Amino acid sequence: MNGKGKAEYYSGCFYEGSFVNGYYDGYGVYSCWNMKPLEDRKKFIFEGYWIQGIANGQGTETTASGKQFSGVWENGRLCLKGNCKNGFGTVKFRDKDRILTGNWTDGYLNGFGVETDSDGHLVYKGEFKNTHYHGKGTSYKNGKVLQRGEWAEGSFLDPEYRKWYEGNKKLMKEVEKRMIEEGIGFPP
Image (cartoon, rainbow, N blue to C red; front, side, top):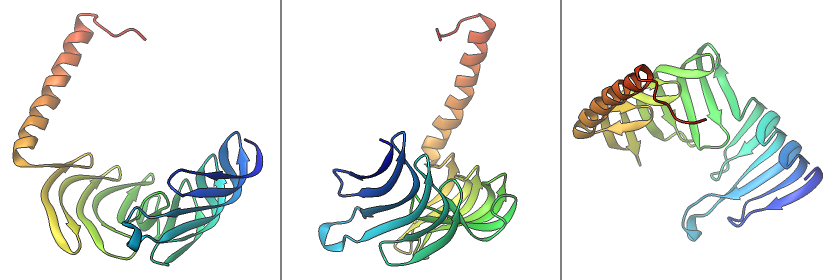
C-alpha cells in the first residue's frame, strides 16, 4: 500500500496516515487498546512521524493512563533526558511500556540501570548488558519483589537453571569447535 490510508487490526488497533510499500511512513496516528480485562481497558495513541513502521521524528505518545511523552523520536525511542547514546540518560520506548535510566554506550544500556513503566512504577533494578537484564538484579510487580538474583540476556536464572545454562553454554561452544575442526557444517 502506498499513499494515505487506514489499517485496522483484529485486536481493535488501527493506523491512519501515510504508507510507503506497506509500512507506516510519514505522518500518521496509531491507536490501540491495552491488553487488560474489558472493564480496565484504556486506549493509547501515538501521533507523529514514522519511517518504515518505526516512530521517527516529531511525535507524541499518550499512554493508557493519559500520560504524554512528546519530542523527537529516533528508531522508536525518545530520549527524555541526558545523553541516551553515550552517557547517562533516560529513554522511553514506543513499542513497550518501559522507561530505562542508566549509562548508555552506542545506544545500549550497560551496567547498573532502572526500568519503570510509563507511570513510574518500578519494574527492574539491577545490571544490564545491551539493554537486556544481565547480571544481578531484581524485578518487581505491583511494588513487590517478583524475582531477585542472576539474569542472562533478559532471562531470570534460578539456581538450578543457572547450572544448566552455564553447562550447556560450554557444551555448545565445544560442539561448535569440533564441527569446525572436522569440517562439518550446515548447508546454506
